[in-house]
Image (cartoon, rainbow, N blue to C red):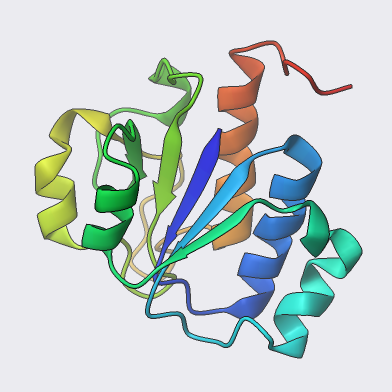
Length: 154
């Protein structure tokens, strides 16, 4: 599995996600610009001493990500989708893409992958727009891993 973070802004979220990736043998892809330095102490602290277990790739742009991963089967999380995350049959080498905390994934990227958009069910309220990024990643990643009986995990 692969987690793709499009322009993440909060180092603690990315650190938490990196820790999950380390423990599930999931690749982590970060698309710049990042809202923090990869050397930032909050990022390192949230990821604890798991960073050496993370298969991390960093890209300068979405275009570079696609260029380096031309066969990537992308699945996009968005509050605007009609399908729920548990209704998706994930490819075993899925690239689960999550947008930046304040703006999500740009509409142009959504338009390129209309069939692979999904959402997490939650209440509809103008002040409560979305879950925390690291929580959302965990919910969706574990569903995708469950579909393959948590293969290679104990």
